[in-house]
Length: 211
Image (cartoon, one colour):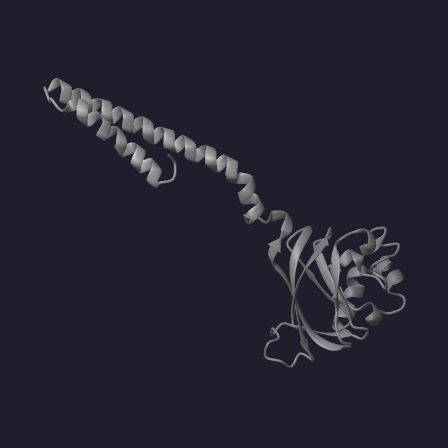
């Protein structure tokens, strides 16, 4: 199973866990040695945590596989206990027995106040878990959405109009030069051909949808 969610951190680290898999004293223990406590829990298969490239909001891919035995599971997937079926993925600073509320060492109000994580509901069990935040830091995304195109449309029309004006101006100069040469050379049809020449740039612009 693959889930794509949004999670964020102000400590350059994400974590994934089922609160029911954490020890009863986890909130107090994190105040003494948070990294050491997380490392012990990860070794025991009760927590996943990992560094990400800086702070902010991330698009997170979470791949979860039953018992870690399927070929679909990445080789570096970590075995994780999810006894209650609630898998929370969030900034590591929100790790708590109740991440929605937090505790004295989390940002005040926990995930109930800050939109920095999501819950994934699963059947209780032991899973192989792989978490990746490589694809999309939302704060740095530069994808051009349809809304962006709509916002840019007026500017594009102005640019296209300017291009059309330049083309028409160059065509006008060329027509005047050709007409002058024909008149000076004594061409009796010079005046009659002027209208035909002026029709060329207009037809070109109309074909491009600019006239």
